[in-house]
Image 1 (cartoon, rainbow, N blue to C red):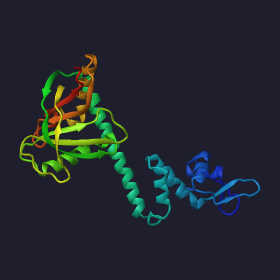
Image 2: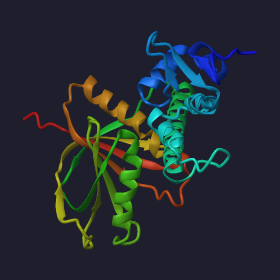
Image 3: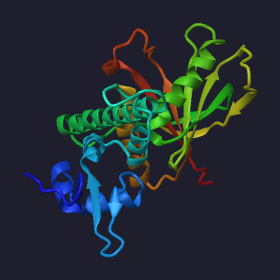
Image 4: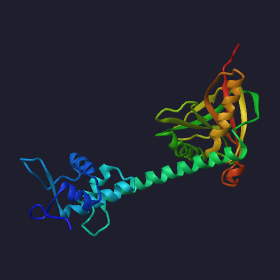
Length: 275
């Protein structure tokens, strides 16, 4: 049984054992203002904690084991938890929900990565049959969005497609436009090409430049397009072709009626004019 120093105070070592934390962790949490000692001996500098603080210490340990960031834990401990036995509520619940959403997004990204790795294991390193195509300039309506991160590209692309489909004729010819190199944020655009283009709020008519393009067909889910894009870029590099952006994705299949594994997308990279 742990001995008391006086009243209900425990030394930092005793409290660490009670709270299942290390002394180093307790000092770190104290420095952050997350769990400060109940009393510090002015003569010796020794730190003491009350047994009532053990609950907060155990909450910190639990939430850290669930990858909850320390600022969110501070919100939970600051009074937004609705009482000792109530579930987290208010701003604390919202913060925890954001952590959950971030973890779900990371899990989805990991699953996409795993699926791509499984495809490589099954079929080998990505390869593609590439052809050179002379592409004429094409009238288009282009809508744009900004993906906050590379993982946000799917969301941004879907938002662009939704804006175009709201005004587009049946079976629209949609082309995604993506930079060859990603930064912290990624500009995303989707073009509606053809004749008799509709008016789309916030979008003006443009001309997609023509030229010589290296073209490869991707068959499979959209999230595995980077595998075929890699093969296309490798083909260009091996033959000394200098690619210029953006990478075009011409969506041949309707994802509403086509299984993901049968979706056909034509990838197109413009090549620099070497004349």
